[in-house]
Length: 198
Image (spheres, one colour):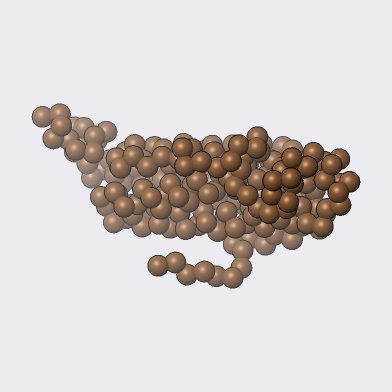
């Protein structure tokens, strides 16, 4: 059961629209390493996790990723509100605008729409946790790249907050991996079912 709190995890109040920024930041909405894929990955993986603590971890982080998706959507929307046709053309936002106007659509900065093919749920405890560790680092790198390109403090502050949360998630998945390997057969902790190697 999810409970929706009607406020963002971190405030988004952008004074100056900037469609060029929106075009790169939208990658964290629907890009291959974005928040949509992260939330669905973790909320899907939780079903096959054999330990209650790891199911809880995946549910907690998957739910938080939904709140990050909401923040990115708010950033993109505020960056593209009230644009004139001239601003749309000059910024290069016209290709996106033709298909979506200023609606927030899950796509990568490259223009490639979100696809479930960019996420993984393998059903193997160790494989999924390693996938999640890598996913959090890829998301952090994307936020690093956004911060290299954006100088507006109204945009940078929520992006820095989101980047910091990727680091926390990485650490929590590391703790989850340690918990998992401590509980699995010490001779073969890379297998979900050690009996395969008897």
